[in-house]
Every structure is written in structure tokens, then in C-alpha cells.
Amino acid sequence: MEDLAARLVRQHAETARLLGVDFVPAYKPPGVENQASEPPVAVVTPAAVALVTPATAAAPDLPRDRDASQRALDELRARYESDAPHKQFVTAHTRIVWGEGDPCARLVFVGEAPGEEEDKTGRPFVGRAGHLLNKMITGMGLQREQAYICNILKTRPPDNATPTGREIELCEPYLRDQLAIISPEVIVCLGLPASRALLRSEESMTRMRGRWRTYTLANGRQVPVMPTYHPAYVLRNYTVETRALVWSDLVLALERLGLKPPQKEAQAVS
Image 1: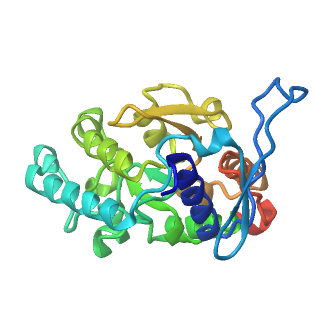
Image 2: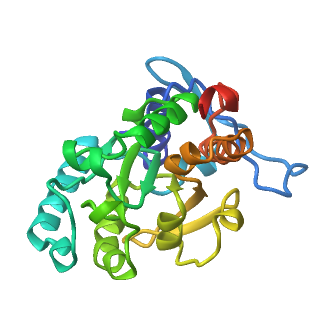
């Protein structure tokens, strides 16, 4: 029977294969470039050879069973619908917009709240901003289905208003549990309200974006967070500078995942 380390290595390699990665470079922490290190361990997968270091193999929360994670997400949604925290504040919703994507996604995008098109379909980010987000994800070399996309609020505020502190307080615990089930490696916060809510910060987006922060999941695990501009903001401020800033944030997220950006900014955020 294979030991735990070997099983974790194999699971990590399989996830890399599913994301289209045929290798993962060995990682050295900053400041240890000149120290001797153990050679990476080669692991054969059905489609490729993945290289991971012993430190990577021992990392917590490596890929789990997707069916089990999806069941846990469905159970959490049922609890949300039963608790109905949105009934404690004014909404303009017709559908609950829970979230969608890979239940074991390495990358999660979190917005603030559904809009009109999302409310009509029950799906997150399907309007104009959603179309731009899809292009951003494709530009990163991924498919929408490989990430997980959700919002802090699961119902549309009246006139797409910015969520209030009380609304976030009531809904954020369900997001925290949702993220704990998915257990991503990186979270990208889309927009100032979502970034401030998750990071408990009053800083401007100018100060937050481009800098790594952390978010503590319900299980106590800390996940790196990259705040960036909301796609709707990019559409309103459609300049070369804004698009370049967003793309640079997405590149940082890719690098944190050990992935290489396949496209330039002009192709990805356009």
C-alpha cells in the first residue's frame, strides 16, 4: 500500500494534469537559493510527468474527492436556503445565486453580489462583467469550469447597490464555509467591496491590489488573496492602464499557482 506522501504526490500531479500543466517547477523559499536541496521527485501520471518537491508533497489540503466536495457544497446551500439570512435585509432577488465551478478548484474568484442578469439565471458573473471575467480566465490559460466563481451575497441588492456592513456580516459566514469546502490555493477578490469585506480593510483598491493578503477559512487554513479591480470597473474605465493593472494581478495569481501566463494583457483583458 502506498504511503501518505506518495498518495499526496500522486493526487497533486493528477490535479496539475487536469489543469493542463505538464510540469510543476521545484520551489525554493526566498533566501535559500544557494543551499543544497533534495532533487525533485518524478511522478508519472496518465498524461505527463510532474515534478514536485517533498515540501510540495507534504502541503495540506491537496485535492480531495470532487463528488464529496460537491455534496458538501449542496448541503451548505440547503442550510443557507433554510436559514435565509437575506430575509433579514431588503433584496430585489428572484433567485439565489450560490456559485459555480470546480468544487475543488485551485483558484476562486469572489465578487460582492449578483446583478440583474445573474438574478435572472441563478448563475454568477453572466452579464457584461461576467463576459469580461470569462476572457480574463481564458487569457490565464484556464477554463471557467476549472475555477470557482461566487459572491459574498447570494441575492441581488436593490438597484445593484453595494452590500452594507450588516448584509456582509449575515452572509459572509456561508462564504467562509463555502471556501473551506473548496479549499483553494488562491483567492482573487473582484472589486473594492469584496476585497474590504474579506480582508477586513478600509484601504483603497489602489493600495490593496497587487499585494498579497490572507483570508482565514472556517477550518483555520489561511489562503493567499489577491485583490483586483472588478470587471465592471474595468468596463467603466476601459483604459490601457487599468487593463494592465488587472492583468498584472492575474499574473501574480498564476505565478502563485505555479502556472505560466500564455497571453499578453491586451489579449486577456479586452
